[in-house]
Each structure stands twice: as structure tokens, then as C-alpha cells.
Image (tube, rainbow, N blue to C red):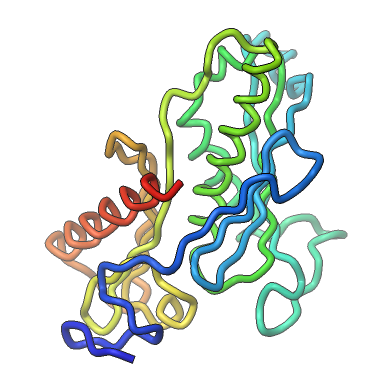
Length: 240
């Protein structure tokens, strides 16, 4: 371990350093787009499926174009203690909140009218959770979406690319008084402040989720975390 500006990160990273980031495209055979995304020990399968239909509410309301939505699930053995599958009672509040975040984040990258009367379903399944699963899901979901759209363009089912921006997400926080980038679980569990940032490749912010878990934070600390997030997201775009 290494001391960085008064704190010690468990994996020896600098405060502004991402975990090891890796993408494995085509991880699944059947979806139109799929990728295994890895942020350190966090691993998530993201798949994009094309459904030649739109939700009933779009038909009922006479909405034009298509739709994009997401589902998120942690496998029972993705953490150090087995969790139950979310079956009978449906998704937990946490799961619903995360999949809504993934869906609305990725929709910000798409002109839905250009999709045509179809739905693109993004499925994110967490194999191993070590912090930042929602950020990994958004980043990997965008890659899977790009693959699915490229397939539609190549087949002639789409004439115009509906993707208007690339997006990625990263976590930042304050641990022991120090702003840090890309928190692993042990850092996240003792963070004074936890924040997830979703951004476009043009540096525009799609969503901020910031919570004072253990202590309130200042505008100066917020700016420091945003600067770290912008740096981290920029590196993700280069690597993906």
C-alpha cells in the first residue's frame, strides 16, 4: 500500500487513478451487442437486444420513434455473502433505482425518433461486485448499444445513426478528507461522501448522484470531485 496525500488506498493507487479497466466485446453469442466490462475486481456483463416492437404505452399515446430501457441484476454470488435472487417480490428498491439510472443515462446518448418502431433493451448482470457496479453498467451498456446500432446500420434497418453522444460514468468520493477517483467497495463503505457522475464525450453532465454519507461537503470539495470525475471519464473514452 502507498500513502497518497494523507490517505492510504488499499490497492496502492493515486487519488486520481482509475482501477484497471478492460472491455471484452462480443462476450455473449446471441445479443446484438455485448461486452464484459471490468473496473478492477468489479465485472459486469452488458448486453443490448433489439426488439421489433415498442412498449404498449407508446402505442397508446401515439408516440413516434423507438424506446431504450435497461435492467440490472446482481448475481447471488457476486458479493462475499450470497444474496437471494429477486424473483417473487420483484426488483428491490435499490435495483429499480439503478436500472432507471442506467436507462435514462443511456437514453441521453440517443435520438429515439431515429431508432424507428423498435426497442433496444440493455441488460446488465453483475458477476463480481467491488464497488461502482452502476458506473460499470452505464459505461458497458453504452458500448453494447454502439455494437447493436452498428448492426442495424450495416443491415440497412437504420439509415441514420441514432447515437448523438458517447457516455461513460465513474464514481468519486471523499475518504479520510481526500477526494478520490473510482472507489472500490472498501473505500465506498467508509466514504464520507459518495458520488456517481455520468458524462458525455463533450464533457456535458447527464447525472450527478452525490450523498454526504458520513460528513457534509463544501463547494470546493464538490468541484474537486467533479474535476476527478471529468479526468476519469475522459480516460474511459480513450480506453473504450
